[in-house]
Image 1: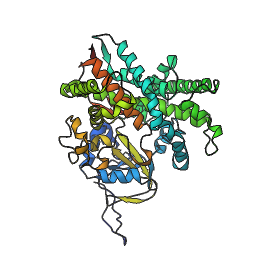
Image 2: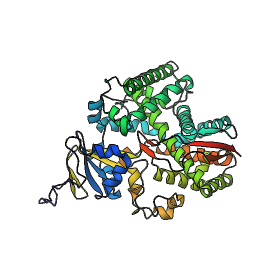
Image 3: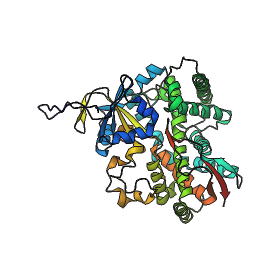
Image 4: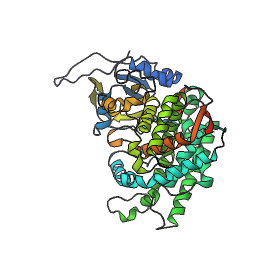
Length: 458
């Protein structure tokens, strides 16, 4: 077990590192993680709430208690987002380095301040029609009795909503390019078995996976550049997220460079649809195996909605909201958050040296029986106000928290509260694949196999 002897300084500070499992020379705990990535964190949780682990060139601490998770997420001067510099140098991989995901410090503050108004409630209300139209097209495109791969269907749906609402364009022939890039990024983040071995090779090694990845990302870069140039050619015709980024010359406080616009577009096109698609996939997987809860959603939709949902209806769709939140508790789309200690500190009574990476595994914390009764069971009612009030704030954090809380949180919840009731009123899904699929911690939390369902229209 790692962790040194306790030594307390004059101010009560400790020199003891957190406990944790023994590792191998150089490799640390890599072999344990690769053997079972998600199960590895269950093992770590057995050592306590603040646990040390090691990987090549990386010292890490996994955090399992809401109090310490809150410290990590809220104390911006002590912890920053880990931007994976060590891995990028080792693997020679870099995706959208100037986008909101990987910038830090003052540059990140400028970007966040500039982009946040696009996700204000006044803007979100205008996206309702795009969400309804895309969902109606999806439902109408299904034949009664058709077998569908629901994770792929929802990925296409959320990508369509994103591009039509935030960017006001129809992807057309560009759709496949973006989908392939998203698939390759997911595969690149797959840290299990042979995929992990290949992933650990630098991008210049001509493996089949590396060549496929480079082709997909080159095509994605070209597509994004084409979309930007097309918008530049039509000044004054649009009032959307992309136009706002391109018209920064009139903003004297902050001007966004062409490279930043390019990287933001990549970031939102990937992250903005994959996480919501996974939330929808697991929500309907759970509803298909819990018909009583599915009936509750359907009854609420009938009682609240006269037609398609509008922004004014969403506050009354409480059952739908509880179902979506419970699905994201059991299957948090992001899976895990990452931070870095930018100065030496203490956490949970243990010393955390500068440069330590902090791992916040939502999929483990969300199923801790200290915070949730019968945590493996699907119980949406646990998110009623009365039951939520007594729960620690960061026992549940699918969108993160603090300054870096997901900028698209309200947009994503709005999508879920439009799509779920529309489907519940018009479609019954018959599950054809496993009711409890294994999951993989990739770029997002993914089912290990496609989720197949048969569509029965109502």
